[in-house]
Image 1 (tube, rainbow over the protein chains, first blue to last red):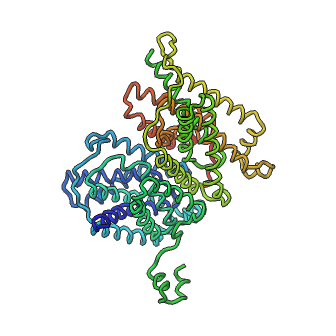
Image 2 (cartoon, each protein chain N blue to C red; image 1 turned 180 degrees about the vertical axis):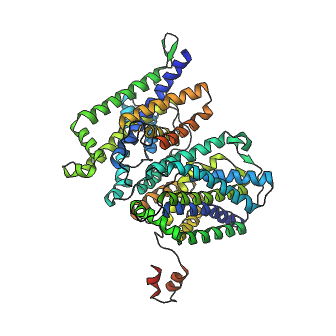
Image 3 (cartoon, rainbow over the protein chains, first blue to last red; image 1 turned 90 degrees about the vertical axis):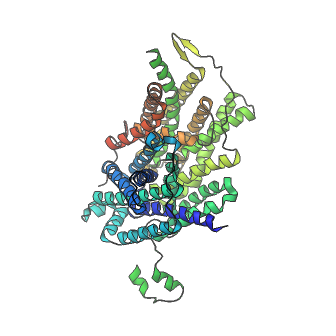
Length: 292
Length: 292
């Protein structure tokens, strides 16, 4: 396997990771399920590409702008759907994701269903890694802050969270907004990496894939999401030889995880520096109490 | 006017197939409170069973028809045993059921692609293409058969649910599974039964759908329409599912007939979002008890 191929897989993992980090906040930490995150990716992708190509802004600005557009759209969606019960919210996001794709299919400015070629390729491994590191650091500090704890409280028991004075609607909105910004940035990365955008890339399959990665990595664990994104993006690529059967195996694996290890790889735990030290024999045993 | 009536006939035909699929979603939702996204896979395999019995094994149509329906029944029950029962035993939250369903649907779709192949299959011609003529209207024999078969199946279903003892047990379980279990209803059997009934109707729908269009592994994606219809009518409500399906079928044919088929799916998904925003319980759904 040559370096160019490996680099491609790493970049794809990084792009997925960005979207998964956002979804991890929404699903893993706030307990809201979304089957429409590919829709936010699509909005971010087209917005970022449009801004970069037509206004000639630098990469990072257009990516952030793409994320912001996706975030603003999510505020509209959330305003109406976050009051719904859990599973209805999930269905609404499914409808939203598909609707976005179908709208883009008919917007001829962006090439409609045929796609939009000729976006300048500005992504390399180093900037994907940098963007992801920034994303991970921000996410970790968010989930460990007061706001993150409020979101976890909503996931655990919404009624109780409300009773102790958490504005649950507002925190759900913040969670949805943040996750949409992450998805939007991930979408922007897709456009600037492949140089080509097509609404088909952001279908329900993509949304499902993201959700499955979050579950696989483990609900409520940032490091789990990172591991999940790296493994589940790389594995199908490495299994290319079994082309037809790998997705069958993927489906089996998903069911198997759900019925045997629903907490996923990491399930609420994090890989911490101190934990690694302890695992290799350094560090103090009594530090465990502080971590929990 | 003639054109309008002609469109209405086409709409009724496709709407009645949607209804057969939608009641499957609704039945499962009414008992288990989750959206069984693997239902599309069962419908797709029903269509393939019918195709193989008819075109390859050369069975007479009636045998092939019931063979396909029975095949889907077995498959749906198997699906419940493998993918959902372990979750039920644990009282897992609804999102695990949905992920498991997604895994099952990926598994079924790709299993068919890997074994049979992704190509389109066309049913052998069973009915003459010569349409009935009523005044200036042409009613296809196939459309008539689809409508009549669906109507008979739905009538039998209504009889079964509303007028038999087992049907009463199903309604009781849908109303409150725990109390029903305390009253001596074997809820595990009821769930198997519900999956069997849903699977049977899915098989019938698959064959009818395959006869009207073609058979291919992604039929499952089309069945998301019937899911919209189920939400539109009110998830968990059987009359709602039927009415929602007929309205959606009519709406779709009228839009593609008078406007543009490109916007058909967009309007379906927009309808889903609008319904969820303004009337999440759908046309005939039960108001759900909101906890907070």
